[in-house]
Image 1 (cartoon, one colour):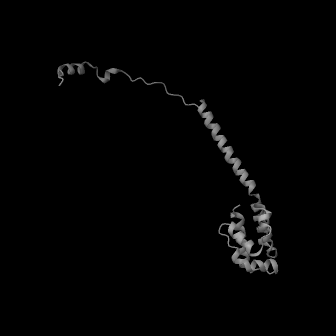
Image 2 (cartoon, one colour):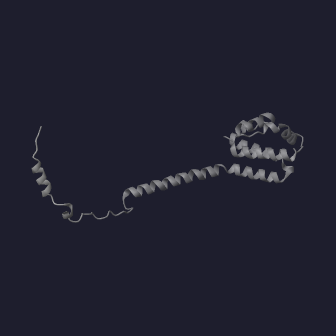
Image 3 (cartoon, helix red, strand yellow):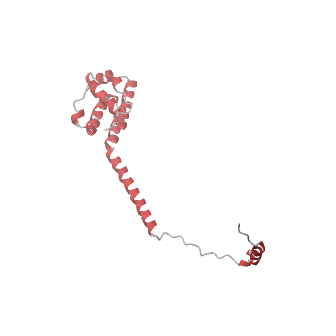
Length: 164
């Protein structure tokens, strides 16, 4: 065990000057904050590049979905003119050919056409109106106004939600 002389330690403590005698505390000058460093230029460039990329894809999507906007506008015109109701299916066929190709869609009709629409749209149920639709197309008999409204609603839903 090492023995220390406590009187010697006490004398060392007493020889130290008190904190008040140390004088004022040295403070370095304030660090200036500017955007002049290369890191800010790189960050700004990356941010602008990201914004341009996002803008490019948004514009590309807007241009790609032009056919949807045109088809929905055509359905709005049909909705205001009840005698033009069979044109709903012309619009649907035109959109389907645009999206899926003439080879896949061109020869579909009747039950297979309505099944195709139900399969490719989210929660679209046109097959349940098969009788009214075939009467409208092949026998020139318009469905009742409530059925017309529902068929138009389902057609709009298909145009908005179809998967390509």
